[in-house]
Amino acid sequence: MFMGKRGSIAWAVIGWAAAAGAADVAVDGGPAPGPTPPASYAFTDGPTRELSWDNGTRRWNYVWYTGAGAWTGNDFNVSTLLAPGESAKLWRFKMYSRNDWPNTVWDGFRIAIYNFTGGVPGSRLWPTSGTGYFFRPSIPTNGHVWVECDINWMCPTNTFIVAEEQFYNHPNCDVFALDNNPTALNHSWEYYGGTWSLFSTSSVAPYRNLMIRVIVETDNFTKVAPTSLGRVKALYF
Image (cartoon, rainbow, N blue to C red; front, side, top):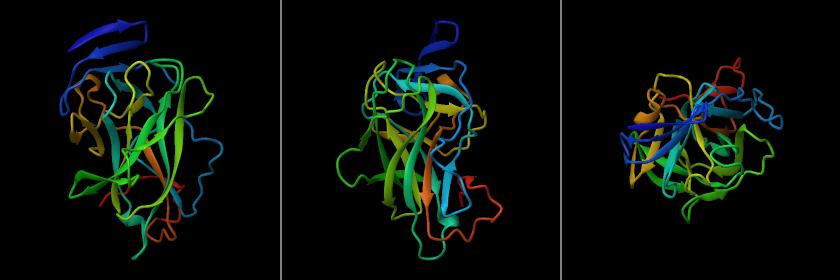
């Protein structure tokens, strides 16, 4: 792996993605403000929950030099949040990103929901046609921010992967982020070169937890403690 300094805070890395084959990547670990939820969304103890595996603090931003067909995502299981016969509505996709690196504008990316049966990623569930839903943020913030995109779709399964495709090539692309927890929770995935694998790129070791979230709605959260604060970790088996 070869590394070259990029200013005083950023590093451009050309390396091997351990599980995804040869993948040229660029990463930046410069300082960032602490992420906060958008003011437009109120977290309550109602039937809406934001599920995540990250701890809310960024460690790395990450992009592939070739982004088309390169996906990252987190798996979730909402079965413990549902009463018998219920289904979850996936309300919003959420990802920590920025518009000031590697360029200075929002370029857009694709999002999709994939099946997750038997502990491995499967076929795409949403959108039901095409190759993903293209979304270009319009947030005026110059820097790090949570980006949200409406889904508003009733998911037919309790286990799924919420994913984003970089779509454009570096440097004309929007980045995703990994948190600063050095312990891999093994719920973050990457799709590169036609294969899904747990996110394990060596250039950002040991950080493996993607800052990709989903906001879900159900009719009944009888299995969630009433003292919860609404923003909960994904409950998994």
